[in-house]
Image (cartoon, rainbow, N blue to C red; front, side):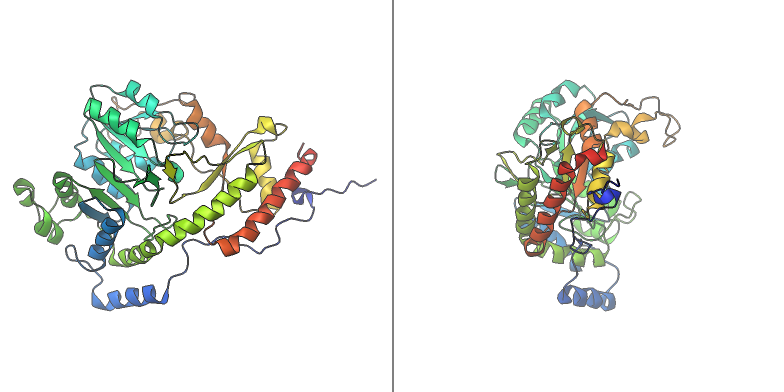
Amino acid sequence: MRIVKQLAFYGGKKVVTIKAPHFIWPPKSSIQERKDLAAQRDRDISIKGRSGPIKRLEEDFLKFLGKRKYAISFNSGTAALFAAYFAIGIEDKDEVIAPALTFHAAISPVYLLKGNPVLVDVDPKTYCIDPKKIEKAITKKTKAICVVHQWGHPADMDLIMKIARKYKIKVIEDCSHAHGSKYKGRYVGLFGDIAVFSLQANKIAFAGEGGILVTNSIKYHDRVTLLGHYRDRAKEEIKDAFLQQFWQSGYGLKLRMSPYNAITAVHSLRQLKKNITGRRRCLEYLSKKLSKFPALTVPYVAPYANMGGWYGYKVLYNPEKFYNIPINLYVSALAAEGVDVKLSDTPSFTSLPLFTVKEDKMFTNRKHKKIYKYGQFPIAEYIGSNAFKFPTFTDWSKSKKIIDQYHKAFIKIHKFYKELL
């Protein structure tokens, strides 16, 4: 007798009938955005100093955040992070404490300044750097703490800033996942000495490629300007008399944003609050649906937190609570049902050669480079190996029906799990 399989993975009928793609980001441009892009093409395809759409973006960003004096745009979030570490004076053998799980660019620019990332494990609920483990990692060489508001969730800034003040070390906030997220009612990016926001295409505020650095320090403003914005802007804005003499050459790099990217970022920023509201409604609804399955841990939101960006919606899967079915098979079965789901692409740093290979050939002598081995950061490694991700749905009117069908797919997988055994 032929056994009929129910799961689509084995030839059954899939549950999700809504035609893909289920989520498109960035959203389509408005008529006005396209007009502004076209007008800029005929007006000026370069930028001289802090002017045009660059100036407009930086002013709009400061207005959105509030309580920051300076905003300097860059051609990527990575470039802005590099500038941040340069600004605070990271040099040979200096140490920067950072989480062992996030996107590498939060801390990898430290290597270019011949500094050393000092990794610590993450909080098992928020996935941000664990403040309780920071103090043990501080040495005489520690110059800064890198705080990433991981996947949009604010880190525990009160405790982190208390530690930083105690040891007189700087704090760099990487807010690249968390545009509009709040810690105890204040926007992330308003706590550290410098904060950086990526505006890469997948972010809720986007430029295509781009980044923006904010600070209250004129010293840091001058240093980052000289690093990446030579000539016009350096001549016009740098206040420090010593640094001003280098205005024409800067420190040798051009890291400024394209005016086209700035125009796109200006328009995306205007939609930010609306998109945050829609995304929050969609993803809280998704969490409510998925929290019914014991093998799944949906994103935690601490009582002190208000989610903004939700960069990626990551769910943890515990195979021990679901007949030890491997995550690869579980995710593949969901995908076969029509669910837009993928394994997380954020491994712990102990899985990346940049952090585990001493002689990486970045420089000729790497004897002072710290290296890490798998097993040092069990929480980060578990999350990196056991998470899968969904689209960050934003349009409630369209997404609710999709999420309801996704929920049915999960029900089906859990009902007919024996087929996966």
